[in-house]
Length: 261
Image 1 (spheres, rainbow, N blue to C red):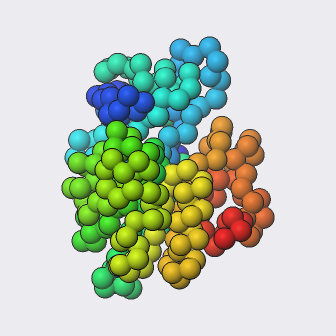
Image 2: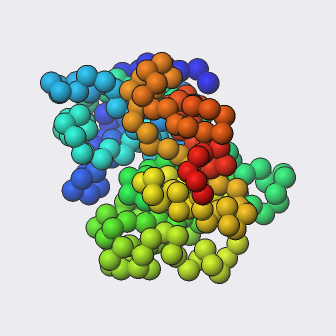
Image 3: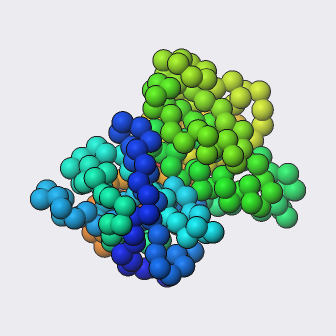
């Protein structure tokens, strides 16, 4: 896909948790086509310690409103600067980058049953994927995990596009435990999995997928700098050798990954 460098305008900024903000960006021209699972490299202005762009998953694309949504976890100086943006500010973005999730083909599988499993800020790309699936007539199941109820993000939005199942480590919402402990994985069958979140969670999901003989794709969150496969800082060992996550991923079939599962 063609890549663009755009100065997008902050149309709205919303604090969705004490640690996360949602940026709604727009442009005077129609935004380029973007796929679920792709990401954006944003330039951080105003930070003396941030020299490289920051990769952020595409959270949602609202074509009618011509909006791109980015969920930002404010964990460092660069991302905290992004959280300080105001309506009307410009944000320089390189997009769309990487490869997205494989979407089920209703013609090949008349009644596909995908489950989208996310943890923490890793839930971000699953919202757009769910919206695209729903538009195709496929209602996904979301399995979302967090440490506590307060850490769950965008639940009302996820519920617009599919069934939502929840786990929290402290049991404050949904079932207690990790996503792979949720009872739905034992009582229902799914024919494909898309997952994004902390690596230990994704490794556990990949192990479950292997045992259940279910196709599974994971969106990796390796440290990235250039987003184009030039700096080699995001390399992942795979069955095909060392691959740049930003260029060959960030989405991989877990069978490609050497996670010793």
